Amino acid sequence: MLAYLIRRLGQAALVMAVMATIVFFGLYTVGNPIDLLINPEDDLAAQEAAMRRLGLDQPIWVQFGHFVGGIFEGDLGTSFVHNRPALELILSRLPATLELVFFAMLLAVLIGVPLGMIAGLRPDAPSSKAIMAASILGFSIPNFWQGLMLIMLFAVYWGILPAGGRGDTVDVLGIPVSFLTWDGLKHLFLPALNLAIFKMSLVIRLARAGTAEVALQDYVKYARARGLSPSRVIGVHVLKNILIPVVTVLGLETGNAIAFAVVTETVFAWPGIGKLLIDSINLLDRPVVVAYLMLTVFMFVMINFLVDIGYSLLDPRVRIQARGR
Image (cartoon, rainbow, N blue to C red; front, side, top):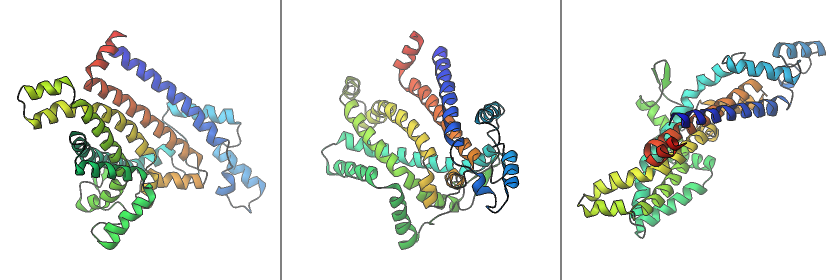
């Protein structure tokens, strides 16, 4: 098992190195932020001074060397616009995004798994067909339009939930969180639901397929033959086994949700890293964009690593294969 973990960490380090190279050269060779950061009426001397101050007068390979050296020191550059360390700027917005994403994934699991199991246990029932039809809608509706409709219904017509913002927060270990206050929870629910609907549809279909397959396995039939109650058979023998693909896919989808929550954050004015990314792209604030992408890649890699560990804990066959290598 230790060799398996070391091998996975090595693969993760290689992915980070390749992505660091692609991200840097993909961004630092496009456009000229000086055109946006200084007055267009300034003379050439002012432009050259700004380029020296930002380090843009150096060859691209020298800039890349400084970038790589900064990574090992935890420094991903200084924002051209905010004049603050890019990583510090992103980390100040990251708790809001993580709170939104994890609440959305929690909704997707708590709602999607039971609905998928119902559809898998009774595939021909009208309720099961309605659940599957709803999951198709969840896949099909554009995220931004879906968010606008949620605002229209819950905030404008019914007036029971706020349309945007984060609401009241409380500090937990110095990190502001919304879900511990009633006002913050009300502000969190709509954007989290908007982000969760696609994931929920995916979980429903995974849980349905897994339930239909697992219900026919010999160990489930044996459990029923032993006289175990239906709730125990479903809650232990069926649920545990359908969670294996759900955990795997949700791990990847959590990374996707963090990276692409920008649409939901924009629609609901949620103060996360998505809005910061859009502003930084518009202003060619390269260090912030690079730091965002590198942090996103790192979270993808770590989430995949944790999924591998969780998968090995849920499926004994993975542990056996790992020991055999």
